Image 1 (tube, rainbow, N blue to C red):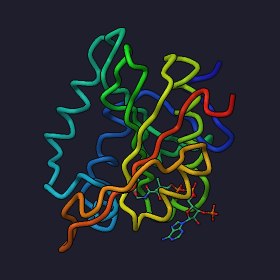
Image 2 (image 1 turned 180 degrees about the vertical axis):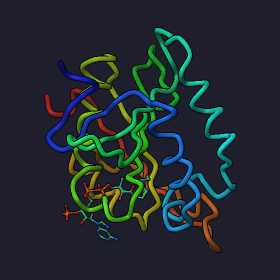
Image 3 (image 1 turned 120 degrees about the vertical axis):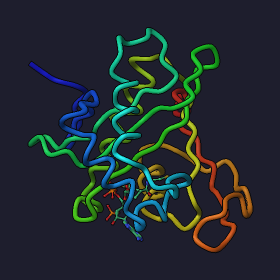
Image 4 (image 1 turned 90 degrees about the vertical axis):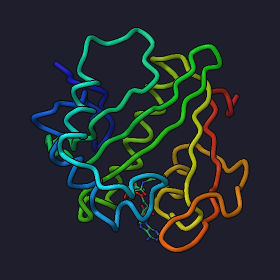
Length: 181
Ligand SMILES: CC(C)(COP(=O)(O)OP(=O)(O)OC[C@H]1O[C@@H](n2cnc3c(N)ncnc32)[C@H](O)[C@@H]1OP(=O)(O)O)[C@@H](O)C(=O)NCCC(=O)NCCS
């Protein structure tokens, strides 16, 4: 029996407070990690993280505006989170975000595989048609990962966000379901 959505290296599974909350809270307080993402500079307490997990563990809405998966290796190790946010079912559009938490788990292809499985889920299961991602121009790993799974750059917002002492450029990327047809 399969559990969640499986790729070649990882599986996207439902969030489980007991299994995933402590890890996510740990990762989201790692300044090296939060230095690379748009959000995440305010201390995230365990209580706030638990509240987030509690909120997402209610009876599932048929059209949730956010769907966040835990990313686990095929061996069952929790290595990250991958989400679809601000989902708009009428327009068929969502924002996407990915975190591979433990530094030693990065650069092993987990992010790429998670993004690929998430895109397939968004397009084939939810019926969405476009995913949008905003990434700091310095975030080479994220840009590489997103381009590899079919996102393309559509614009740059100069000095969009303050991060660690400077206003930094953001790259806007989209993946479209029918782009190749
Ligand atoms: C971005 C992220 C999700 C990518 O996941 P990952 O599992 O590390 O990615 P992959 O291994 O699939 O691919 C990343 C690629 O970037 C490369 N890379 C990693 N760090 C890099 C760096 N600092 N400079 C250049 N290339 C880098 C990797 O070598 C790999 O390329 P390769 O397969 O050709 O060797 C992950 O690194 C991460 O969570 N980073 C911190 C949070 C973050 O930036 N999230 C995205 C916010 S928009």
